[in-house]
Image (cartoon, rainbow, N blue to C red; front, top):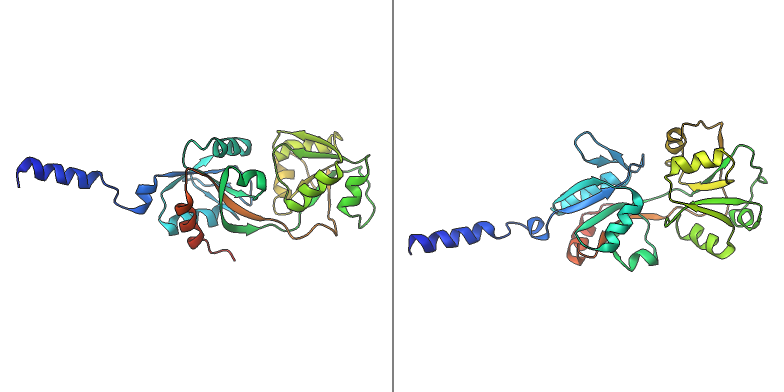
Length: 243
């Protein structure tokens, strides 16, 4: 075998993918700071109720990835554009999102959602969320293009309460509640205290309402652009330990 031919063969072997992870390409794993779900780490990674199992699944599956801190609405736009191999952590699965994204198995399940109200808002003891939203005097504040889980999303769609939709993050929305620009907004109990603190408020500034008709919270998933492909999703599913 000539020296040139040997060099060509070795060069081709060097350029060939050496592992499934390399062949799949590095995936960008997007997250938005949301303690205790998603918390930035000093090393550029993330941890938390959804970040930790997501990162562990990628590592266990041998899939190369990098963390990227990205606003939630931007994450949706990136996945919908489907230009690169991107995933986002801790999202709910909805029919609208399934139209443009791939989902893994669940990585976490929320506790029943609650509402934050301004201090002056009065609601009957034990009131159902459906009855509260049916009262046209109730002013609901929601985040645009955001899902609060199937039960709440369907209830809002059905009842059509007096609603203001904004593109602000949760701490700014809670400030709007405190300023009496709306009566209530939804929040998962896992992150209520953090959002109140980030809004510069205390538990005396807003009230928490629990509802007897709101069921156990929704499952959260890793949501990926279709560029990622079914093979990677299957590898992640095998690596996810959540039951």
